[in-house]
Picture 1 (cartoon, protein in one colour):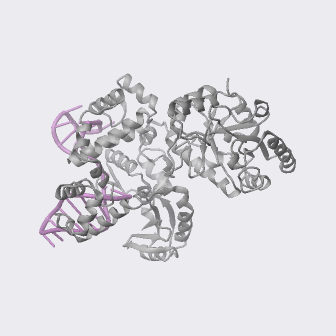
Picture 2: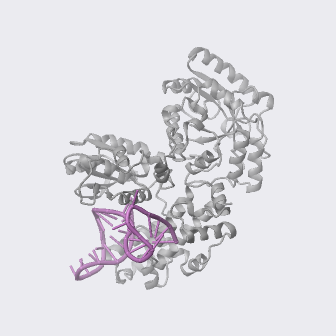
Picture 3: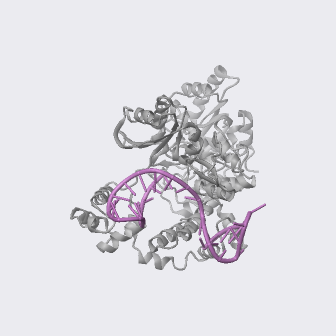
Length: 580
DNA sequence: GCCGTTTTCGGCCCGACTGTTTTCAGTCG
């Protein structure tokens, strides 16, 4: 079941799309879209409180009219007028708008001219040459439309990929661009730099005196299979992996504003430009200018934000979910967690269960990353498919852990733990007598994902009430682009975490990123603590930590809320302090 | 539909590109 906040946001977005089809005033449409984003940055409890007290209009971008709509949505689940608009424009028409190069105007033109928005019927119309007869369309746009319709009917249009699938290739390409002729600075930009969960393409920005030479260098990268376009300052290519990469090259004096512009998000940029206007400045990728067209000197993003009267806003926060207002008010977290803050690797598997590296290899790798400890948390006995450990196995493993600690100490420690399955009735998978002897207990769901919301919520809350439960592993169970989260009332899970002191995991496995940034933000609002974990099954996967850190930052997580920024002894004792 | 350190009305973010046009609308980021 979707929570109230999610359904309100969805309704506002639906309304915006309907109004686009309706040909409504563009700024009215924008108002709905901005309101949706604004609410995304507010916790559900705060939203309900603002509705109850009639103070919704204290949010930027929500005036009397939208406040009324949101109140109606919260109270009744309906929005007057939305249903009527939805019926006027069928779902197929709404889906058309998502096709590349098709917006509301052209979708409507197709629908009206052909009397249908059904993708299969449109394919036929393209093949019969009927689309090119429609005013505003021609031979080229007919071909483009046909191609994207066929893709839509084939594997679907979700050509987004998990960030981690893209990042290594993007970083290799960045290193290559940095070696281009005359390159002064180069950086990743776009959703990759913001560490979004999924990315559609990769954006790079570089500075050099002669753009053309760098662009030629770029298009000669061995993995390039197709050059989509190459102009004076931009080249766009397709790699053999199917990934699209765009490179912009500017003079170094323009690097900071170009990098900022192409990092986005679009909504963040829009709001920042509005702020600039109010200060009598205009901001674009080509610089910050005053009203007389004089260019301000901007050498880096720090300087850009400073000229606008703001502290630096890290890329992970640039989603227009309240970060600019918070920055203006001095309310941005001043101790946003960083990778350097993390002192221990939490949640790891070895060859004792389903890992691919030995315990010794894992320990040495963690130590060489500068970590002070690694928690050994194999699967428990119920997870037979993953080589889960029986109590006897766990005791045997302790002997190896003790030996390794004698060898690798005293500045590095393996902590004794387990990742216990949460059974169907919410019990943990090992006897209490054993759980109390462990340094930490992660408990996670690995089976029976499909329970209904009431039973699943009860199952998780029951586990959290266990006095030896320290950390809830991958709390929502989602797999990015593959599996939706469990049917779980997150609000109650967060509340129980606050009451019991149970720590919620931010699992850095790039297919999970669980909790999500949005849930991290709700956890922060409630004072719930987090641990940033790798869920590593090999030494290479210790690198998952960066995704956990980035996801936590996207949820504005403070260092002080993250338990594995503590040294080993404090980490163990703070977990022991649970269940007051 | 929102908003106000020039405005309670009249503005509202910026630029590039594409394809279809013959001066520009629509789309995109």
